[in-house]
Image (cartoon, rainbow, N blue to C red):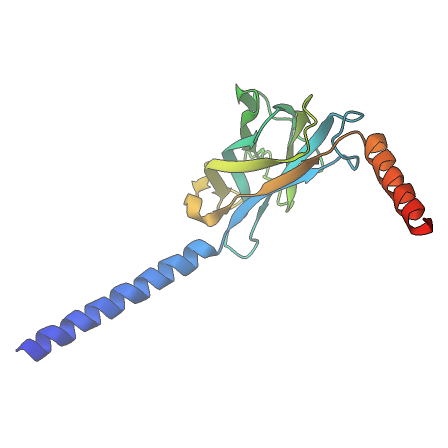
Length: 207
């Protein structure tokens, strides 16, 4: 009797372990997520204290959905000012209204939406697709790294071309992203310091 109870318990433990591994694997495979990109090539410094940051959405085309639907996502910088600038969807730039809510000086709640009013207007399947541009600015040029990150509150997909409402994904299926921006002193000052150090080295070698 004890043998059967022990075997049953072992089977249940093994099954639970397999279910846990399966759930962990599923959560590790994102269905959609975000891309942050710094549109300015110049570093942040006293001669260039701001940058335009682009936010795009992407999704797995093999996940069984027609297109991205809508999302409420918090986008924020670890310090300084971060503001919503422009919003739309994809290369055609379809405008969305009242998309930004400023939560504090460095954090914005953004409502991304892929326009979809079937059968008149069918949601774009562009992937990845631009959704917004943000404005980062600072007056503190202490050398450091500023992180700009996404944190989704909702993430919806349109199942088909005739879907009226989005199907919301579990947030474990959404891949968040972080963009790192380097803050440096004035480039001219940095170059002058490097040049001075080089001349000092040459003089020491000659001496």
